[in-house]
Image (cartoon, rainbow, N blue to C red; front, top):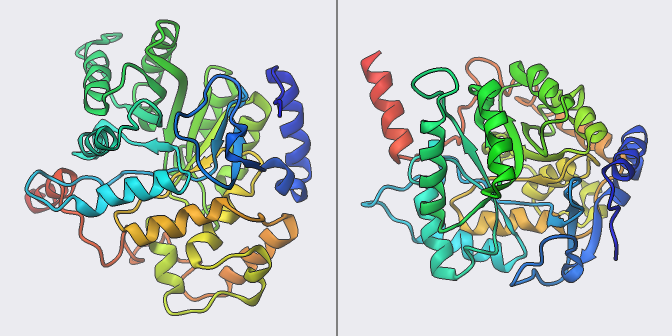
Length: 362
């Protein structure tokens, strides 16, 4: 199977898909795992039919569900790591290939790199990582340089696949620096990220500038603001879209706790709420990959199940939204007093400890 080799051809295709999201099922090719093309062939290919998406700049294919590591992989040396090690193994064996991490996530890079090395998959993973750096003075790249070196050491990599300017911090300096790293073949793709809808307009502006290969954005069945500009700009510019917080950090599950799936979910082979929410996200034709995070081996298997089987079309996606809008607490999910991230869970890694200490001091 061949993919369009020119960015223009792919962009035109994406535009037509966005005009008719009813064709979302066609946008997500459900391919045999050995259909990976153009620039990357994984040493251990996922088995079975997996929903794959092309990276616009190269046409290479990646599975539509990835694995995030924020908080969930931030386990300090005295903590219990067996579950997250099992999460990585199960995710890989189920066909997952994209892993997202960041130096800001405490011990997450260290743990991911350790587990990947033990499984002998370090060189085969598709890694999206981040830079959060200002330097000592304007255009000083020493902090970013050290951050890149440390990330590659922790992950046992000679290069990073997609490096993203984290939350647009110092973007005017960092994004040109990422371009230099790309030319030097230390990274393969340039990206930018944000999770806060208040920053989606400037994020979209960077996408529209044509300087990015990847954009990472918060998008879910509840938080749909990214559709207004970021996803449209990504489709027009041929930019890959990685979706963070597709499950709203377990808050969507809190809303549906104890509720059965709607009858119509069976039409798509949806077996659990994770698949309900994730299939809704990856059915959007601009989305390349969603990266839910978890430390629970059972939950990672639920998540990767979303990249198999049929995806909802425009009519079904609207029906799914309408169903959720009738549930108590859905509209208020982001309002003051609503559930915090990861309700009823305690992630007491470096980040959690630092946050608790800061709250105590202030």
